Image (cartoon, rainbow, N blue to C red):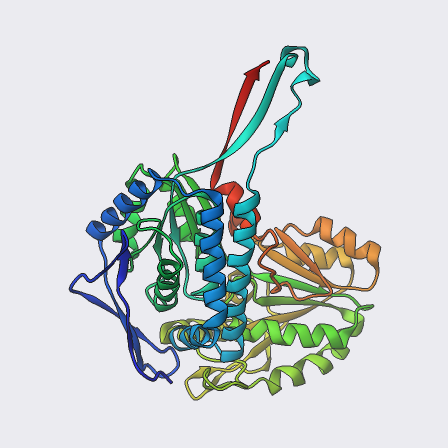
Length: 475
């Protein structure tokens, strides 16, 4: 799939750096060499932290930060096709999904630029108590300090953008560690940042072993905040190891959707078929568990299964491909083993369940037991389960029967029932008559329970990346 291999270097203190050892980036689709980047270790990570700390000694005014972010947004829009191609090649993301990600990154930087310009504190009503009479108080939002950003492979551009754009808007220098499977998009973004006039040290990018780089970021007291997106075990382990830092976690999910009898079943089927299998299910909020009211269960399947069967599995570089490869053969084998487990526990495979060439076909599993891995764990593959229910309370209990809590969805016509479900579903976000895979980049996004402890979206991330300082004046 890949054409000419790309070589990019690390960015440390405004310089493009080689280390003498390399990480090869290969296409998840056909194994072709997409590019290579230098492999960093503890020494390079310390240098990057040094550079970030020095940068913050010379703060950038808000208007300068905003202008840089605006210029990056413009550059991403101008180079949209190149950026989408890079995402497609290194992540194996189908081109139509890669184009959406590239466009979303434009929005993320645009929103961050807006937030940089309006970042401000509050006026405190001091005379609300006798002690405050004769005093004026206000709060300032001050940068928290150096931010370490650790991003995953599945959105190699926009999830990086969701970390560095708010950090820069808040006035925080960044040390970024992108996923080793997909570092090229992050380094292309770093190139655009430097071309946009971001001074040296404000963004530093190191690629390499997570343990070695992570150890430095956890242990160095100058790193005041770690922003992590990835697996729950790794994320919570980071938080335990860095109790004095702010550690913001955006983790996994086993995303449930409820389909009520009064829903528009055709619309629900169309949205869920697309969002259970897009990018081979490799999204934290990919539709995984579908609960359908028993009276319309067969009717819903009549809409849903033909749409699943019509999804095109193949080369992600082709414009009409819906489902491409998993990120690595080991992931494909893991997901296949989970499908086999569900089959062995008595579940029925209604679609897929096997390979098309080397690619896993979109798989629908009917009524698996709650302890099957395809129900209880995050699949992160092109698999969804479908189970009938009798009452809305039962459906909500099934949806909530997970240690995860990122997003959930419900398709239903009754507004009262929709609002009651939104209150009862124990998740960071609930979509009504939309797949819970939906995310607009300005909205608050994050989970509860094991799915995380933060909210992303530039306006919300900036709050996490600043400290509130109160100033009291005696009049």
